[in-house]
Image (tube, rainbow, N blue to C red):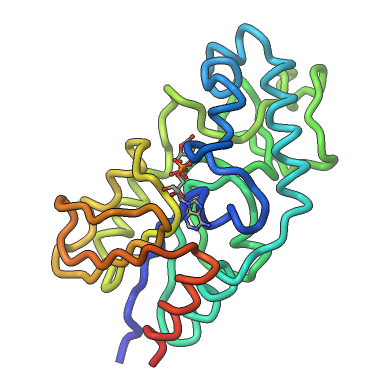
Length: 229
Ligand code: APR
């Protein structure tokens, strides 16, 4: 019998208990920085050094961060289910925990790329990206991150994966940012959906939704235990 397919859609909240800031909570990143100054193509044109510093700081934090019980519980699911992680996060905590199938919708902090040719993506060697570091075509290297106002290249792949879900888990995202947040609309209506988030409230536009008002570190292991019964 083919294994049931679980699609797991994660946001910054799953990394919060690993010490990485979310964006829109109190104390979140967008309280400290203006998006327009550090996470848009215009910001990159205007002040690339500031943008590089913003991501250098986040990369240092991500490099030192450890997966938490929520990440590990998702790995456990792979014992019985065909699990596909679709994350908005740029950290590599799902990788560090051992998840096999991971799709990053908004890029990866551990990679950099040419600023003239999107297909030239490189693993980060050191922790910092500096002005003057250039790609093979001679352009300044940039973070391999999707900035506000830029296309989300993996959205189509993510949407078609979502249509195959037997079960859909939503963990630690405010579902505020599109097109990523629109992923939910591609999941079959009849597929049971679970939302794990301490400040979540039920969303009438999502059918078959169970809201688990818990932190990921507590709610995800409990949910996984239930699903593995
Ligand atoms: N466990 C689970 N959820 C949590 C926890 C926790 N310990 N702490 C906070 N949360 C929840 C918050 O209640 C909130 O709903 O995580 C969510 C975080 O929402 P955002 O900060 O908006 O992060 P996210 O949804 O991932 O943002 C999406 O916006 O800024 C862009 O590209 C960036 O990928 C990001 C996108």
